[in-house]
Length: 297
Image 1 (tube, rainbow, N blue to C red):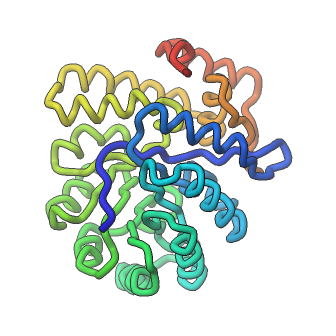
Image 2: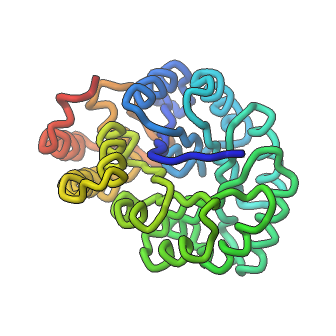
């Protein structure tokens, strides 16, 4: 039975300047994140530029991650596509490789009703040999899983949890109230993480953990150990980091920050572009403001 509590990194995917996946830098990043004490690894998610990765590319990234992590922490693989059939095939591939769970984003492009979402996930889960996590990220898909639909899906065999990145506290709170304690709930929003943990969520799958994994793990620890004052202070620092990186510059901002930390992740895949010199200086200033350039090791 799949279980995970704590902070999972929403991993970036390193590319060279031509947009080719780089295995060696990816292994370096995996080791760094693991060394910072994270509890899980999410690969080929939104932060990993999954929308620009085809089936063979995802397969290779899954293979590298599973082999390199070697059961040190759970590996969660993003297997969702716009179509149900492609999602099923990618999820089957991920299971064969040995991932611990599949993170399946809602179908996108065409409007989809809650009934169709239920049928989509039911079909994926029934054909998968690995546990399935729902993934709600309406900012990028323009499709929203309602709490009532999540509650119904939580009763479907092999659907074990959800990553909710809607950033809507009322929705996340309702999901927590309508699902059983055994159903795993991750916040995809750092801003909502302390409140989510207090309400019974299991942890966070966070993009900012790709830049500041140790601080995210510490925030989780402080929240769980009942140190609200210290947790609030650290939470405010991390919100400044989010504002200066991904909220302003997106994935390119995260990758630039990682590069400035002396780690190998610089180039996004087109149509995303690297930051300009002035934008990179802005990212550097944010890192310096939080003394992050001194704690890269």
